Amino acid sequence: MKIALLGAGHIGQTIARLLHATGDYQVTVLDKSAKYLAVLAAEGIATKEVDSENKAALMAGVRGNDAVVNALPYHLAITAAEAALECGCHYFDLTEDVAATKAIMEMAKSAKTAFMPQCGLAPGFIGIVAHHLAKQFDEVRDVQMRVGALPAFPTNKLKYNLTWSVDGLINEYCHPCEAIHGGEFIQALPLEGLEHFSLDGVEYEAFNTSGGLGTLCETWKGKVQNLDYKTVRYPGHRDLMKFLLEDLALAGDQEKLKDIMRKSMPATMQDVVLVFVTVSGMKNGVLLQEVFARKIFADRDVKAPLSAIQITTAAGICTAVDLFREGKLPQKGFVRQEDVALPDFLANRFGKAYEQLRQVQSIA
Image 1 (tube, rainbow, N blue to C red):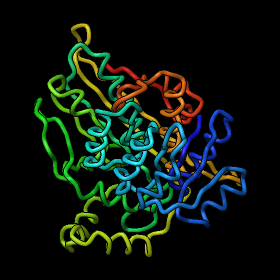
Image 2 (cartoon, rainbow, N blue to C red):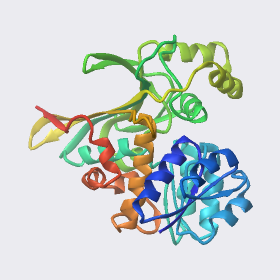
Image 3 (cartoon, rainbow, N blue to C red):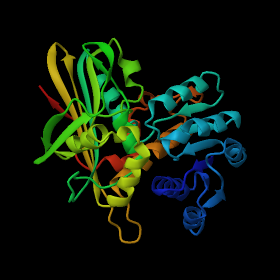
Image 4 (tube, one colour):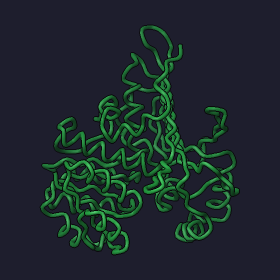
């Protein structure tokens, strides 16, 4: 299968290596950075230097491939999807942007190829888990999804280090959050809904952020009382972000905030990804709760270290592509994360990355 992979950043490089190593994929990586491309070219992976913000240039680069795998920043998702559509390629991406996903959904209506956005961690794997658990109930009451990509050793006031895209981070902190409350679809405010919980003796906080639900609100509307997604951080992070975004009005100057964070907040490869899903409802006349919890840790291999967010994000999209190639997903139109069977995901050679901590538990 011939893949045009857009983006040679940390996540893009990980995706390229995973797909290339199987021998089942002929991968060509497109990016505007000659420096990043050179790293992959030295490993025998095909590359092309392309202006990723120019649709005509993207089309020239992807034409002739079977599929486009987009690992570019979220604001380029629509451009990349349009290029895939016009070139007759299947399309996969990692976007958490709600507006981009809705635009891609519209494109897919008339497409002869498959369009599957939101294939990362959240949205992505988290929705696959929630949908799988919810389907087991006769009547679903509450679906709660919590995900955090956290530094293993927080040292600053925000208790945070850059573990993924600053653009994506600020985007999810600034846009309305889809949810279902009391059986009705609502738009919740970002950074609200603060709650605290502990897992394995560690204290966390969680609050509303945008995009993590994917298409679950549409899928479960009218079938669930409450459904929401929140980002997990260490206690105190939310209050400081509200100060920056609201009190200092940096929500209105996001580029300045991104610049501040890039200059003052170190990135880290020593991180942990937390996945925590609870679903409650009636099953065989009994009120039950199902819990799915994972902690995925960074790979500290000396020669090729990988952060936990690299592992989980790349595993999500590579698994989607792999299952599609095997014919286990719809082959045309819009493909939801809910179309992925959780057992198929976890059994996949890439999806096995999520099998690090514990199994699903049932609590009566």
